[in-house]
Image 1 (cartoon, rainbow, N blue to C red):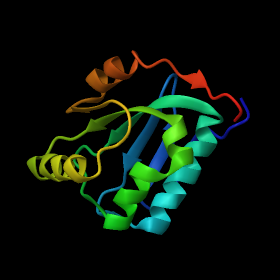
Image 2 (image 1 turned 30 degrees about the vertical axis):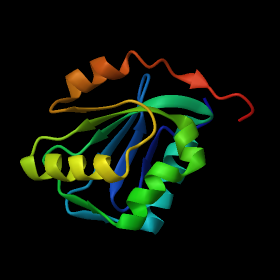
Image 3 (image 1 turned 45 degrees about the horizontal axis):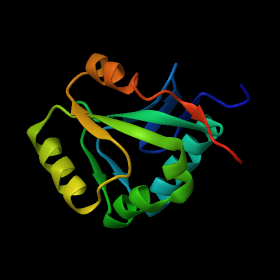
Image 4 (image 1 turned 135 degrees about the vertical axis):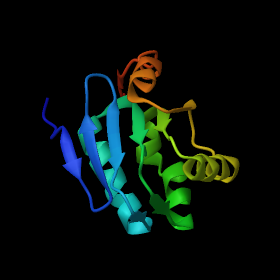
Length: 136
């Protein structure tokens, strides 16, 4: 593989694991449009032309996303091409409420599911086999 399997931005860590992309948000981070673009660059690079499921870990974490960042994550075509499904790890009521609000107004493309632990999320993403993207 010719990708760097671990990346970092000011608000998150990104890692390509066996069959999925793991993204862990840093506590008290703010994701604005520029940071969202950095997320996309990191993810696209470590996906290396492969359509993969993602696990987005927000356990015990407070992160804030601007309106522009939320729109970007649901409309960025190169990101949508590599994102096959999304499992969100959420264990606080506040984050669960924010997630429901996000989904209501900015529903991501593809299957999504919420979990409270990594083991269950990993089991769920196994059903989404990574695929090389044609004409990448």
